[in-house]
Length: 546
Image (cartoon, rainbow, N blue to C red; front, side):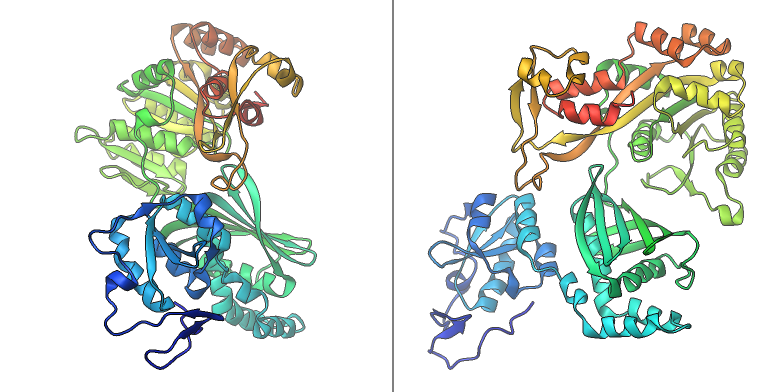
């Protein structure tokens, strides 16, 4: 931590702290006087509003240090120093703050998310040091005019300012629960955006001199060729930044203003959800559970990239995972590590693809097989064969609706009669943002509300009450925090099997499924909106194509 601004003074004289006169500390000062209160003192609980109302004192400490220990330090309205923590175990750290500031410190408790939000709001980011580092800018300027600048660029990308900048970007993204980082060259520099709850948010900009070193640093993490800037490249890396341990999938792409890089973040700390926690409605939960109990057949989860399909499959595997079953998975990449499940990751460079792994699985005596994605005809055919020979196969597809998965499998040259015999259940899903519980507002769906968007009338919600986002400090002004899935579960019964066998249009299959009680994605979303979990606008945003 930075204590350089504290001036040395003789014992018994005042200590100057940025122009303010403070009482000195004597050798006899106890921890009770300086830091942690005595056993008779009561520690108050404060709010986010109180945290941000005082003058922050975090500049005397390393922002990373404060984030790691979960502490916020500020000056109250009467000039007193207050250190805020979320847990009693952290109180022992307050003594360090007292001696650093040479002030008596009053401890307080606050919610961990309030402390994190306050720190994110006021901490001076170390990235700013890299923006104006003369040595970096000068070196890049020299390298730009040289034909052979690879080693210079490698040295810059491995230098402390650039390494620190990249680490701070990744740590910021992980702290804010982002799923992707976008490093995008623009005419006058590098723009950094992160995707939070499905929405891109701009967080940083860098000068043009730093654009290449930062992208090169990312390429070094994934062992990519930093000299090759004309062709797309992709790789992966495992990093530990701050308190976070994550896998990163990295893909680069040449653009008009330089090389762009996309980083997909997969956190190891992300816990595996139980099957009853993923948000299925009672009817959908029953249908999905019944399919999982089948001794063989195929279960397909469908939706666009980033719609939570892997999370749903991992939760389903959790219900099947016991000592009586052998479960094998082939994934790209492994997002959830599940004890008791044999998980493999594709490596096309050595010939380990979904199809080749699936063929090998059939010789491993499995009960359950999970295939990360059916991308081609070979994988689909082997998967169907496995489901018809006594194995339960779980997999994913990219389609907009549950019924469209049938059309997609037929497009992959699977015979309709084989599909009708193997399919047990098809689940379509999307992720909707959840309303911030601190600032959401309840409204009545009246004529004025319906007039704002003509699509509201088609939802059949007139006369009911729903909730809308407002925005506050806790949700960064968006009105939303976190996400949940909405589902469409098509139970493949005898009538649906008959339609599949005669290759009926997907619209006809969907009508039949709805007549049997299937809830569509938009209907499940409206249910969540009326329950106050999300908003109607959010439901329409993710299901508009529906």
